[in-house]
Length: 159
Image (cartoon, rainbow, N blue to C red; front, side, top):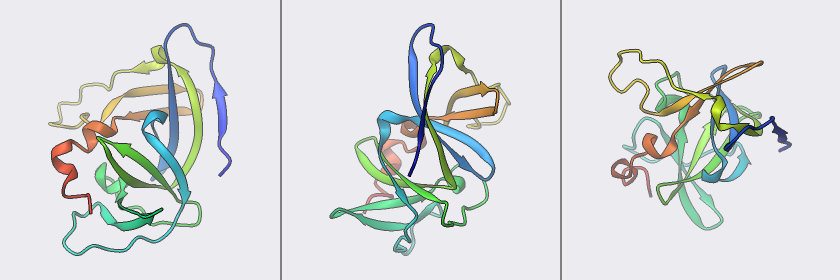
């Protein structure tokens, strides 16, 4: 997978992020959580697993859960295609694969560009996001994977 590395002019602290698309929207996560990016490969379904768990896959001898990130975020389910990718992340000491429609870039941005998510008076509505990054090409929602997959909920995902 060919991922461009872009550098913006920085006036202070920087964030290294991986940006990707889900259902026509752009999201990003810190690169420090990412172990690798793989092409789409079917997962083995697990009976009675949570709706967002597509199944499990064997990653070099370790069985990891594959998560439909769209469903986890409350959007319509991802229909994997040849452009889909599995972003393998280490979240709260647990490896898991996150299905995304496509991976965009690895970016280094000025941390000052991260703006807070507006208060929308929706209970838990912004708990998964650390903020919004406004760019010329559009806005990128900055996800917090640690909060999204709190340690208490990881046991139900791990095989």
